[in-house]
Each structure stands twice: as C-alpha cells, then as structure tokens.
Length: 520
Figure 1: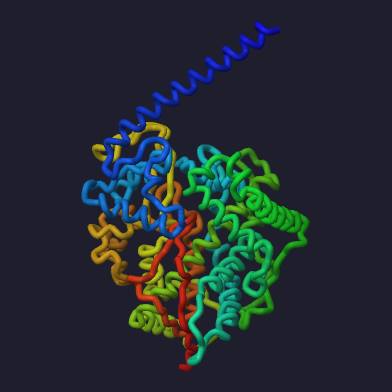
Figure 2 (figure 1 turned 120 degrees about the vertical axis):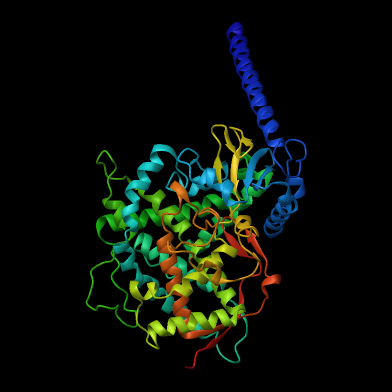
C-alpha cells in the first residue's frame, strides 16, 4: 500500500511540475511579446500595473485613462500593453486597431472579465462563445424585429409618463437642485422588466423593491471583483469578500426570473396595456397582451427543433435585464446632463420635438421618432463622450498581428471605447459636446469618420449589440417626453464633471439638475 501511495504522489507531483513548467513557458512567451508593445512597463509579477492604480472605482478609471493619455504619442496605431495584476492585455485605443478584432469572426470569445458575470448570466448571449453563441444569436435576432419593437413604444411612453409624474414634484421656479440619475434609472428598469419579462416591477413607485436592490448590489460587487486582485479567486471572494451578499442577491434575482418564467408558461403572467397611459397610441384600437422577449424565448426552437429549457431561458432573460437596464439609463442620464449644460442645443432639440408633437400628450409613433434627427445626433454625441460600456475584452486564442505588433495567444484584448471616442485625430476638440459632428458626409451618407470602427458605442462586427435599435428608440422616447414637459438646467460644468467606468460608465456625483416646468 505504501508503494501505491508513493506512486500516486509521484505521478501527481510529476503532473503538477509539468503543468507549472508549461505555464511558465507560456507566460514567458506572452511577456516577451507584450514587452514589445508601447506603454508603461509593469511592475514585477504578479503586480503588473495594479501598483499604479487606485482601488477606488472612480479613481481607478481616471488612473487608467491618464495612463494611456501619457503614452498615446508612442503608438500611432493606439496599441498598448497593460497588466491587470498577472493578466496581460493589449489595449486598443484607435478604430484602425479595433477593426482587426471587432470585424473578425475568429476573435469573438469574451475576455476573462466576463467570467465574473457567469454566476448571474450563466452562458447567455453576452457571455457565451463558439457554436452556442452563434446558435443563440441566430434565433434571438427575430425577437428584435421592428414589428415587436414598435409595440414596445407604448411601454417606453407609459413609463416615461410615470417618470414625468415623479419629476413634476421636483420642478418649479423655487425647486431645489437634485440628482436625476436614480429617477431615470428606475424608469429604464421598469421598461426592461416589462419588455423582457412581461412583468411590471414598479421600480419608479417602489424603489425599495428587493429585486431593484439586488440588481444594483450585484453589479457593484462584480466590478469590485474585476479591479481588486485579492478578490479574483473564488475561495477568497466567498470567504473574505462580499461573496455571501453576492449569493443572497443572486438568489433574489434568479428566484424572481424563475417565477416569471413559470407564470408566463402557464399563461398567468400576461400583461395587458396599462390603464396609466394618458392617451391610446396612434391608430387607436385595443390590443391583446404584449409580446415580451420572454414570449419569443418560450416559442423559440433550437436548430434541432427543441424548445429551450427553463435554465436556457433564464440566462437570456437575465442577460436582457442586465444589458438593457443600466446601459440605457446611463445614456439617457448623460444626455439630460449635456442638454442641461448646453441651452442652445436643448432649445434646438425642443423645437424639433415641438414640431412633431406640438403640445399634445400622445404616445409617439415610429414615424415620430424618425422625425427627430437632431435628437438622435444628441444621443450619438452623448454616447461618444460617455459610451455606456467604456471597454470590452476578448480572449486571444491564437497569435495575430495588429500592424507591426504581434498579439500573443494567452493574452487578452481590451477595446478601450472611452479612449477611442476621444481620439483627437478622429474627433476634433474631442472633449467638446457637438451633436453636429454627426452630420452625414457625402452622397452615400454615414458619419464622417475615417473608419466605421472609430465610433462603436454598441460594439461592432459579429458581436455588436443586438439591442441597439431598442436602446435608441427607448432613449428617444424618454428624452422627447422630458423635453415636452421640462426645461433642464445642469449645475456642474462639463470640465468638472467626473465619471467612473464600472460595468458601465457612471457619473461619480450623480447628475445634479434643476427642472423648470414648461409654460408654453
């Protein structure tokens, strides 16, 4: 028996030694090629650039941006090395470099950072890769058909009206300034809940909802893990970190989604048009139950003709809730802030809205939204300055080149959208808010950039955001509804306005505004 134990120990030790040796050889190779990239040299393994960055969320984001501002001139292609602790990244800060990755059908596997989302989203559309991702993308695309999105306009408007009702008490000549961010965020949460799940959670009128609290808590904990080296490994996170809170929040989120799926399967969860809508949509007539994304998933079949099981449906519904909530909230909030700080732009947008709606309170139609091109430019410029997702990452599974730089297998790519959108070679006066920079150029139309990958608020290529049309329609509806009722005044100048890049871009101090009721 002792000989057997000794043999097992020897085999295990040999296997471990071989594993460590191969890992060392790969690390040495990756480090060799990463050291050839421009950028500040990292501190010794496993610290990397961690020692140069704050652990506070807002300061961390500013430190990263300052790091690449400092070395920008050393790389015409905008490619830099960055070590997030022991993990190597090639950071891309120009569209010409990002195109190599984003346009490729080979580099589509999301980076290791997305692994922290898996306890919540499992392997849904955002986090999956390979054949599963291709299959899911194929059968989820019809859920975003314009006929389905058109029906969602009622939801967008109904919840925008609730938002106006919530804000009216805060508006007036004598009203105090306040942070509008949580109000708009709860509005978008109500919208995505009803459109994704067909379920009203009434976040705007019940902000103490356990589900609402859990959404915010989980998002904060996930980003905290991403930037704290001590919290990367599960045993440490669940023992010494906020792991137990994370588990409780996930149970709240998953239990809620599971209940809604079961209700919808049994036919007990249908949501008919709310009586809160002040006027019926253009065209009149009553409609049956709205079709939520969940209904599309319940009816969808895989390529082999099988219906999705509950676990597969839950991961996609949870993904819709995650991707379609905070991202649109951030965009709408930043747009309100920028309009409030630029009265001339706000007046031009209001005139356009008035030309379409007059002083009516009717629900917008698709044609109405198409008749708001200047408001769309405001949203586009907002997403340039403050992209909802500040960076995305991809795994590098095989060597490839970006210009003269070899990006080695075993590293990761970080597409730094926030920096790309502030590239002065593409966007003159990049820190200036100027919606007119999105005027189309030439007979073929299209924005006047050197490449389609200079501006990627919804990513680009095969893994672009499937819900970008949904998001733009929602943001146009919210903003046009607010402009029909209020004039907004921002209190913090743009040069003093600070943001932090978590899972999404957020304002550090909120969005402090003063609202004035329109009297004409």
